[in-house]
Image (cartoon, rainbow, N blue to C red):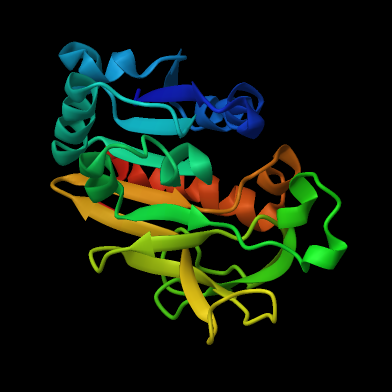
Length: 234
């Protein structure tokens, strides 16, 4: 039976407990023995990490100790899968360049509405946008058979490197109130090979309704199965 480790915490605005709870039944139904940790200290336990086939992380911002990050990086390099969504993986541990190198992409911002339409709450950053599958995404087991889909939520602008394999993108339009002069396309779903381990990042997932969206949920769930060490031959 494969072992999954769900690590959750950080900024409460992303509701890490409720968000990860949405996926615990899926993991159990797919044969995983699931352990849940509310602290990244578990990453520094060599025995736990060596026995873990999949890590699902939902820790927005926060910080991580050097020995914890070293344990996470070593486990992934040795074959443990690593996945998550939104700020829980793409905006974790902002002060750690070694974490950024591991994941391959970092949240930079989520552009907002026309200032005249803002009301002073989180919806000021909710834009209707499309998640567009790439040619590679239309063939990849995580996203094959899916269509492009539209969301109204935070649209992540991501800084990234060339070691990622992009399965879906989203494009930030030029607007009069923004300072950029041409559309910017950011990865919305990507995979990354790190040593023997597989990493999957899904940037949508700000709120529970987005995580329940059929397209988003399918990508996250398939990503868990694909990233797991037990699927490394597929």
